[in-house]
Length: 304
Image 1 (cartoon, rainbow, N blue to C red):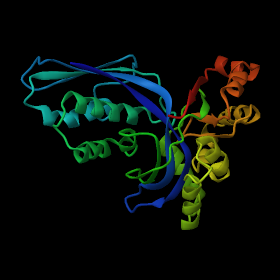
Image 2 (cartoon, helix red, strand yellow; image 1 turned 180 degrees about the horizontal axis):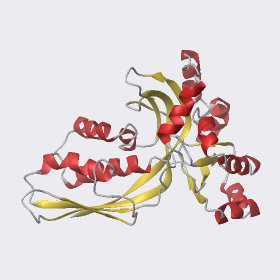
Image 3 (cartoon, rainbow, N blue to C red; image 1 turned 90 degrees about the vertical axis):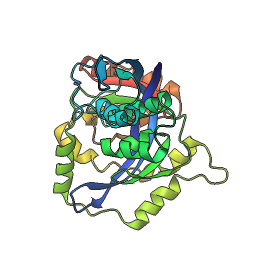
């Protein structure tokens, strides 16, 4: 049996730091939003080659190995295997990678969640929703979000999630320079800035702005209403390592983006737009064509 599923990328509409836990983990207050850029994952059951079930991983992405410490797909599959030990099969997973790495777009987390969902379809009833969620948490803080996707307020280290009214269907343009951002280094630089955690008033204002009200139900309307409150606290420290990101943000802003920012810890940037025609004009502009020549990744998409 084989299942083919798409693993979506995400952006952080805003990403605020809310202090630290005693173990050093940063606490977040962020709205994550899935977008229409996808990795494709094939999960297949094959006849068992040895006594124990085995994971056969392959990909078009050369740097990925079979090490579960470095490959979220292998780790996800390894966590699921104990629930299907009695099955006479190996698990083969093929990844067609399209979401860039070191981008802040959540590709590795999405891949892991998608594999868990695919295995849950191949072997229905073996795990509960809670067990699937626990597996996701063990892999990484963003993985539980991708089990459902959509528009979600994420708090803590990502484990506290609140579904919000959908922001689906907003046209967007994604840009990423060839350089990536080191997430640990970015957080360390943020710590050096010694900024205070968010106030409860700030949190409530951000939350209320994302909610629907009578006559204000469209995602674009809510984006217009709340965009002045949106901010990525990691953008400034990331810019010190990859200052060329400012060029991409300037292009998005001058091109008419309703809102533009870095996603996650970077180095991907995104702009939200009123319509696709505005994006198409940017895509045909000389300055964007010059970015492509410099090795930038460029992708038209929408919120999903």
